[in-house]
Length: 172
Ligand code: S3P
Image (cartoon, rainbow, N blue to C red; front, side, top):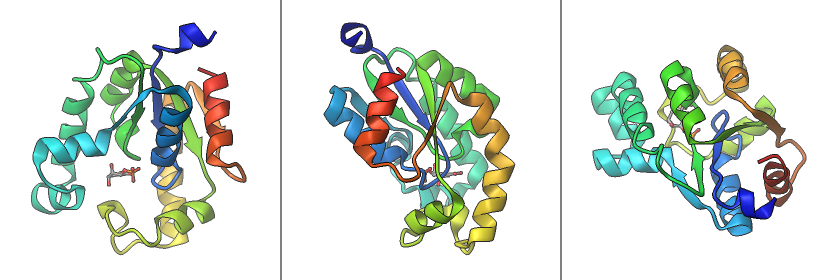
């Protein structure tokens, strides 16, 4: 029911460019839930961009920060948590995400992903790797982790953001 759903948390996972942030914003409009962008929390904590964290301290440091920020969120209510594309890579993170809320995996075809990430150079993982083959391979290597973390799988291909949100809110 609407009342029961009002305090429930939504956790969004999926590859870079799967639409997590756009969907989170629209979920806020449709449900009044507060949005927490995991990447933004990391940037605030480190006072540095994601690219700078990767460049100066490396991916391992970024991944550790991801886990420490996640572990601070379990008391939050009525939130949409938009995770990074690689947050599911650590089992520990997936357990923390499960404590936070229902996990929705947003999927998109590699072609659509490439289209969405193309003009944005703020993703160190894709630096120098902005091509379909790389995205297909990385998606393939992460697919098992996404699927085993997911409570609900939502395809975003050929759907509008409001449609995707309605689907999520119906499955909450
Ligand atoms: C990453 C995805 C990014 C960000 C970081 C690493 C990844 O988040 O956390 O650049 O490993 O897939 P988005 O999925 O929001 O781009």
